[in-house]
Length: 304
Image 1 (cartoon, rainbow, N blue to C red):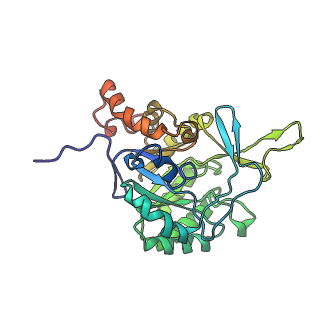
Image 2 (image 1 turned 180 degrees about the vertical axis):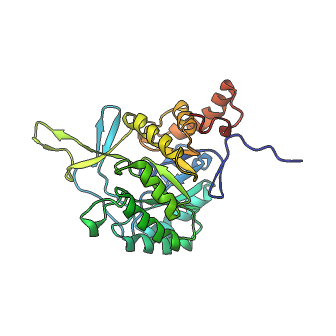
Image 3 (image 1 turned 45 degrees about the vertical axis):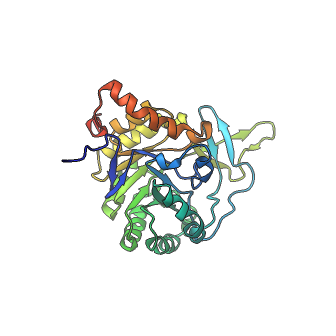
């Protein structure tokens, strides 16, 4: 007798997720703090803090600034480094039972390759390659702005990776469709988008920018319509799975991204507004589907 498939379960690159809700990188730590509030093992997946080869203390000055319907952040990839992540954080994350995505950043191609080398020998499920990082050898322009640069980066990293490679796209790319197609052609197994939008905040009393680094990343409800449009455009043009993120706060938001073509979603800024948001959405999703007569997510995926 065949076991009935869970209507919430999904598969990305051969990895099974119990549901499509993934905690987004940079908003969930490694899950330990949230686990004090609820069992994070109920999540489909957890994407780690952005990891770099060497530990980083992050940026000085203001790091988080509230805006209308969102926040701006200039955290600066504060993290313990890949080695300490593997030693101190990964065992705990794997024990939760959620899929573990290691979000890997770097300032140059060599950083990415060293990180992949280390993660290859672990039980990380998926590597989420953050190509929104500034390329220090190319004047600080992010790897994910120009499609040809992204193609070269992804193809070289993919050649070395023994893990499924999910590439996280920046909405600041010159052309999001060209960027997605370049990453797919380079060998990306899946994509996640969008990362934060570059923004500016000014303290008019001090007559200075809010952030020491001048510009910062905008996220939250304010970016959802643009993120949803970009996810829809990418899903219509690539064959690999897409994970959508950007301003997701409700079950309805989740369904919108899935209708736009996303296989799964990541929830980020909403975790700061309501630390129980992921749990609430996971609890509510099957009830919503039953009310709306949706038997499985596959039924509505990409119908727009």
